[in-house]
Image 1 (tube, helix red, strand yellow):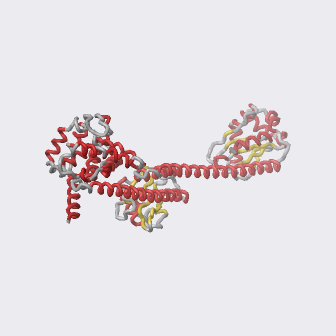
Image 2: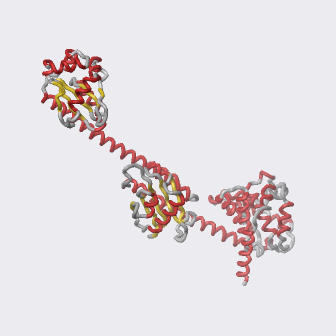
Image 3: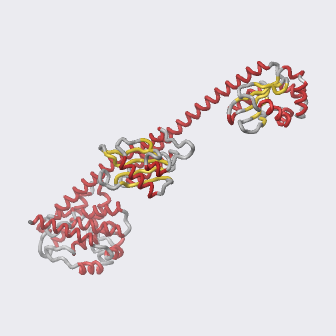
Length: 519
């Protein structure tokens, strides 16, 4: 940019300009309106050779006489260095200048007419000094603009970082996804080759005894396994206030990485629960600056808040689930034969959902639906629930109200909206002979189909006031016989392939609890 300004000034005062960066080649910089004769003369080998001879060993701040009547000087430095040529009033009578013009195949009179100057060498020196001052001012302004641009760019990057992390703060069910997202963002905003995080088991936030999970973004120089081991060891060695830069030869992680590594500690209540690391900064200057450390620190701050949110979220989930479990146990306790029934139905239904391809989160919601599927029995008299013999039509009609009653009890709870179809329709049959709506086949919500199989399986596997439990073979035979009539055939087929050892363990747990309570 300064070269263009020098060109403009030189054109006004009728000077010529060449580009000559240090270590580079001398080349003319004619203006668009430069006369063709002058432009040709600027390129002449005799002209270029004489300039190079005159200025080859000249200091950058001097003015040199090229020939009698013509002076040249450097303006600018480095890649932006140029040469300016000016004529003095003595050029008109200088035989040496005329010979130089002719050596460049130019008419001296034409060159004089186009470049004639009225001043002497001292005037040229003052003009060069003015150009250098302009160059210095422009360079200073350019540096200020670059600095401002860099600051604005950094500011934008930080704003973008805050915005993206804010969007990810809702991933409370996916802490690994959140930590990976922060590592990816920091990798994109910093010059590091890799950014890694170690955090106490991301499924057991706040558990001081949990293992350290490891997440990395980028391409670390060490292998993934080697970096993981080094980062885990470094985390356990860090103090709660152990932020800083790890150095090769002094710190094992930096030695393994082969370059300085930035470290930021994640602490909770005075104990280290994780850390961010970044390394592999390329280029000759591998030093880690304060801005890069600050960005890592921002990531740690967000992770700390996220950690607290996840912990509160899981506490709320545990409290809610505990409340639902206590309520369903209260209902199951109305009938001494159904202790633990809802818990077992939830387990079997959720395992069946996993076999059918549901995610862990979806299976957990199926489990919750199993816990509350019989909550409507709170409105059924114990005399009907616990009757030892066959129910009358009127009594069975009362029993058949429990899905609708359960739906009405739960329908205003926002956190249970997705489980309501299971509560309402878990007694529907594939052939349409179920209740309360008599839905047929695919009309039955998928959640209710899971519960229907699990509910019937546990009922047949448990003692009732009116009969003893069936053997496992008898129960499985009944499920097989009910495929396509009572049960969804695809889910019944999947159920028959299930490993029921977890269910048996749950039965034993409930039996032990019942025996303890009876004692």
